[in-house]
Length: 237
Image (tube, rainbow, N blue to C red):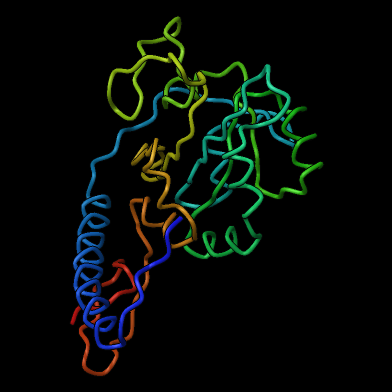
């Protein structure tokens, strides 16, 4: 790997200032994208999904655990595998308990769902020291309906909203899906797959995927214009 070019301080400052303008443009574009995501329509869930958890069989509504919003991380763990995929393993290794606390402070629950049986999930979580609420959808249509398991014998292959094949890839794929409870119903508001999940790294970036967003009021610093309620914690110049 080559090292960056060595330049004078003035040359570095000119390059950094040019990059800053691009960074600001990217931030504004991200803010607009997040706002459009919050305005997406939603679909009512009509099917009764069941999951196996530490306290027995539970419904999709139970996964909300009293919150208005639910984020489901589709963790790749085929029933025939002995371990989850390395990428999902790295994701869980990096999680901290405070992440769930911060999400719950915004009325949002966060759980993992995999198709492997509960016994395998439990053994893996205990061995790795993971604390994320992790449920098995084994025997359920949940993974297939939300395109986290690709199997042409069950349904036509659709990955990241486009027809696809499973050649050269596992039938299990990563993804994140968001749900909302309102008017005595459960609604699907958003799902992201493939590199869309690369943006996930904190409570804020997870909340950006939901219908309510970050749901915060921001003080107006002197000389800046604060964004409205629910917007990103950034300020326009």
